[in-house]
Amino acid sequence: MSAPEAPSVPTRRGFLGAGLRGALLFAAGAFTTLMGRHLRAERTVWQLDPYKCIACTNCATHCVLEQSAVKCVQFHPMCGYCKLCTGYFEPQPSGLNTGAENQVCPTGAIQRRALEDPYYEYRIDEPLCIGCGKCVVGCVLFGNGSFALQVRHDRCLNCNECAIAIVCPAQAFSRVPASQPYQLKTREHQA
Ligand code: SF4
Ligand code: SF4
Ligand code: SF4
Image (cartoon, rainbow, N blue to C red; front, side, top):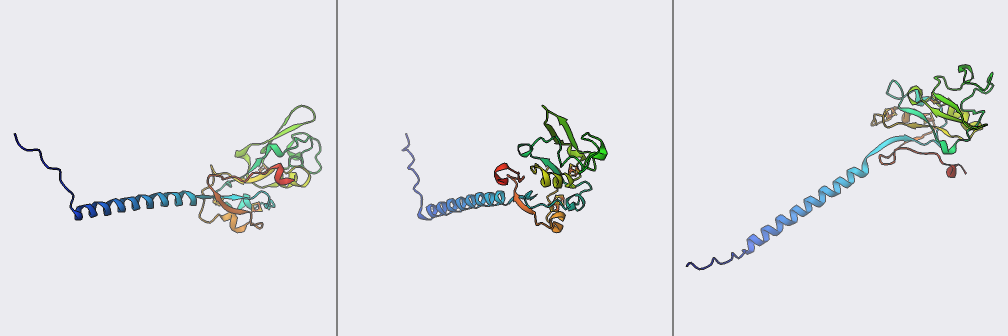
């Protein structure tokens, strides 16, 4: 019967080599993790601040897309559900009905629906909205300011330089974290 094989003893050079390889692998892993975190933290998208926006109409005309990526959003918690909505009706409507001549919106993108008297609900038909902001002006002047413009991220190309941001007179555009791509209006902010 042959004698059992003696366990191999690592040489000093081998031990140092393995240690160095381990240290390098650890450093590479840490570097990759840090870079991953850094890149994730850097991802941003364009958005406009509805509290800075003066609804100048540039959002409708300066987007690189044929139909702007900026649309009106109805912040329902802010809405008064007014019968005479100044974001919906022209200043002196011939009647409080849905006749096109009575509406502020040039494309008929706002849907008006009667609720329990005297309240009405207003919703944006998004594909029809061109982002002109006329309803925003009306609602801010005499209502609660529940209509506001926002860059819609299902449409926006996230251009390096947003063509609207360049011409925005209110400097309302900035880059925001992609994880929080909308800037909402709230009653608390209004107070
Ligand atoms: S360009 Fe600026 S101020 Fe004009 S509508 Fe757009 S966000 Fe508002
Ligand atoms: S008035 Fe302009 S911004 Fe408002 S819903 Fe109509 S098209 Fe959109
Ligand atoms: S980033 Fe480009 S696509 Fe998006 S709103 Fe600005 S101009 Fe339009």
